[in-house]
Image (cartoon, rainbow, N blue to C red):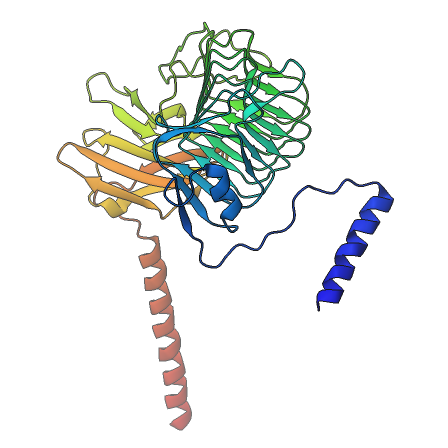
Length: 407
């Protein structure tokens, strides 16, 4: 068995070498069935010692403190700081703060600062090299050269809810076919460039805040099908003509044509006045609500949402009963692109009905509608009644025929 495995590996390497194909610097890892939790500095006094001792799939929890380290991750691990403000990895101006070459790693709740700042080599707070399915969440990256750098096919990663500021080069840089990544809900502030994209495609940039970056807020330098949607830009000077929180005038011609009027903060509540004499309909959501429409004669609410498919969205819709009222919560219908969803709830209060639903985020038209109180859809009952009458008729005819034959 071992000889066959070694022979297979040998042939794989030989074929790739003969074909001139470069071999990835990581190998397939077996994740342990019972992952361990390792604490720093309880068990190991440095993060790197804990990483070296961990098995693939383990979690390393780092207590508050300043760790003067350059961490190298070459296995599937989850690295979690106790508090992002007080759990600090300081690169000491020597190399990257964290360098990742493995798949399925996660880096959560750290301040990462002081990477090397070289005029030629781009060091960074977090550097991904051929690292796929990485999660970088709720970190502060400051005073580095690059904040987060994805290079050489670092694909399918989620970069979410990070504060990235005061870096001397881009806050986030994607290069060399680093594609299909989801960059959402990050604040990029006072960097030389906010985000820079080189030869990388199909990335989603959604609900990010670009605030006073010095040279470029965003700089695309190659790649196709990158999506910029519903970001906040501190230098956007357009206006919101319909009150939905999205700019409608002076839109950029090359990027985000639905810019937010206010910085994104995790979720937003939109207020829609559909009748000046009535209370408004409100929608709280972690996605952007666009093209809102209320049709009283159809007893229907419509709006559009869009965004990257790596996250789930929620909507919490409050409807005054003076505008729409149903006899029962079961009368409320929620549809996404004309398809009913079951993951919903409707709570009828004294003055309002609260409709809550969640789903995987994508491009949808949402339709919320009700059947009028006392006006129940009778189609199933009519069909059932018709089938019953037809059955009775057929049975009666057969019985009469048999009786006649016996006579």
